[in-house]
Length: 489
Image (cartoon, rainbow, N blue to C red):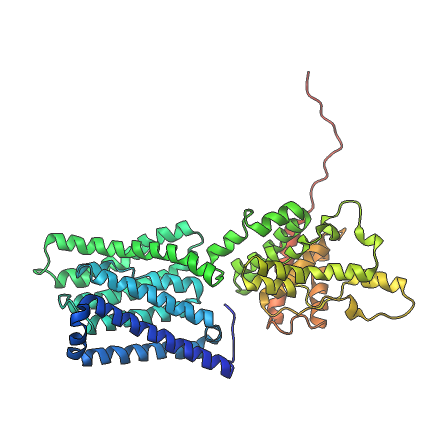
């Protein structure tokens, strides 16, 4: 998740409008819920008799959504700066809200089967942990408010409302804190069994003891079954809805990122078939960047995926890049100026190809930023030898922009370190360390890290991590004896 320190006036207006519209949508859902259950004939009568309760609901929801807005205003302005993120929040609310009240009016006890952890799971996937906790809390209080003041059936006991609140809050908290260890969709299914623990404990402590004398043995079993069903439905609904959000909002969930880096992914498959050298290079860079991201607390899955796609622009003319060439080098027969245009165009071509393939925009940003405005030295020196006077080095440099995220900076360092280390005759840790340190210092001097907020301490950690990784990848091997062994007769 990106960070933002200040909202523009335009951002504030747009975010306020989106929150007001989203809150209005909740009011519409409540009115529809009442209409469906009271019927057209009893609709106006219900409103007349319950004016005070409905006013309480309206004010409470407005206050809760205002609290949610204030939270993001002070804690995560990035969400408010993106209309898509606020839209996600309210769409998740709407889905959770609809299922909560569909279950409620099937049967009074059936509301215990609500998908109570759905909102927490969705938010844990697409927002920061702290954001997910706060959103889940606001949602739980919203459902309690509507439960308490708009009960049309009149047969549900209040202890069920408060048990439902506790289940929603506690199961949501468990889902948020456990989610970091969930790396596959199958593991998400197994999460349902973990969510069972707080739900069934709350049902056994609050609902069943209070209902002794009211519930039959059969109903008590129903309560336990509904509690288990609520966890299963939460995960099932999450698994069904999440791919829609991934596609609609181009969300970079851990599941989506892993799918995009598999060999079956369209661009990765093309890279492997048409530019095997670039593919091999990208695999090693992804390994380096993943380790670096972990070492400085960045999103390792996102960094790894972005590294896989940083050089996809080389699919346009893969034979023009050294790692894909065999014996013949096309650049020997063309001018340095034309060579520079071809080489630096891969950054722009990569961004265009990523956008055309409807992949996350972050990948496109990394593709166009991972060389920054660095000079393409080989062809600059070649041009100097062919020229009588001085040359403008900017004409032989990448177009930029410089990295605007730490992950883009990590890929810049890892990309150049991996490519350059291949050329070293001596790949001892000392030689590799000195080489990587020089590369980082050069990029610092040329202002490549000015827009990504990476610190000197982090760069030191990154240097050590890359050296350790590269010396592992390109470790020395024992020389095999020149001996031919024939089969015994």
